[in-house]
Amino acid sequence: MDFYLTNTLSKKKELFIPQNKQAVTMYQCGPTLYWNQHIGNLRSVVLADFIVRSLQAHNHHVNFVRNYTDVGHLTGDTIGDADTGIDRMEKAVKREALSPKDIAQKYREQFEIDAKKLNTLPPTHTPLATEYVQQIQNFIATLLEKGFAYTTPLAIYFDISRVQNYTKLSGQSINDLVDSSGHGAVIDSNKKNSQDFSLWFFKAGTHTKALQTWQSPFTSQLVENGEGFPGWHIECSAMAESLLGKTLDIHMGGIEHIPVHHTNEIAQSEAVHDGEEYVHYWLHNEHLLVNGGKMSKSEGTSYVLDDLITKGFSPLDLRYFFLQAHYRSKQNFTLEALASSQVALRRLREKLQKLDVQDGSLNTHHYNTFLEALADDVNTPQALAIIYSILKLDISDADKRKTIAKCDEVLGLELFLIQSNSIETPIPEDVIALAKKRSEARKNNDWQQSDKLRDTILKLGYEITDNADSYTISRI
Image (cartoon, rainbow, N blue to C red; front, side, top):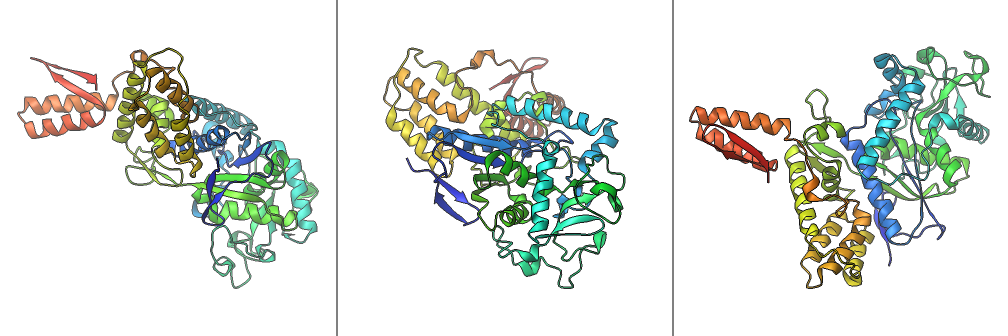
């Protein structure tokens, strides 16, 4: 069965043809280990898992790498400039009074716990940037030798003016990026172009007190032994090449990486290999919105997985929610929407528990229909809909069970492993608070407000039963 993916580079849906039939090489930009990952970051992890599982269901072995950034990622990337701001790891060190290594270990463990709770398959390799400093330095040395990089007293930069079609991934004009004056940003006036990006920061200037540094073969007027640390973009190129080779089948990341991070990965990797293509298929997932906007810590909408668990949701409720939107589509998260997913998943499990437990036969026709949805750029909403259509088929319960269980190997919802009557989660605190407000409204004969609150509670997947002097809350 042919498999199609939408390639950001060509802006088209293309037939997927791996370089090697034995294994698909796939790389995803992973987390920076300085803080817990919010659910927007976790969505990208789950979406990559759907893609890996879909490829496996179509008989592809996947050699999947997701890296960890534990050095050299500056906060300026939030404004599109990854070479400015405070190092994220140093920021965490100041906040928690731990060493960079301990910070990385702490948040790596938490991330892996969250990824496991969401039932994602572990990648083949999960490299740490700090483990690849030698490979990074070798990469930079080659760029210097070939004339694609230059040195200032503060850093080593990649010269984007040396690259033809530098912006081919984003489609921007290079004239929009290069400073016409020929001077760089204020932080380093020796940059040739404002958008030249760092390959190596010397322990100088604003980075004199950098906590994570290594000696290098590079020379600087201000630093002995070339001491410093790598830029963010070079980490991915070095790790990807070391583990997957110089040309990858698939590279995945969020759309925010297109104009800067991934553009720079392409430039430096193809410069090292004399223009040979770095990645054949670029996949980019869209953002997760919360209540129609960006996640915000100040507004309490920058949820981590444990926040949702505390509110009475299962991680697989969130996985079901993610399944309902295509990876290239924005998805709007609300607690009400998650509650709807919780109810839908529970009801689906309840229906499946009623099916004949005897061993049935795979319904090949409808399983192939399921695979066809996945082969169409990993259309998970359509694939999920097919599960419900299988339930309505005029075939034996045993065959339904067998077919849906096979589909669930891709969906990863554990539809048959968790009995519906074993799910005992506490009533979420926000539902209890709404019920109390409703009770007060009833005491004040404010029936309009009471009905409004009841409807809100219903949308969250719970119902109120009024008694003579009190009420009870139960799941729908």
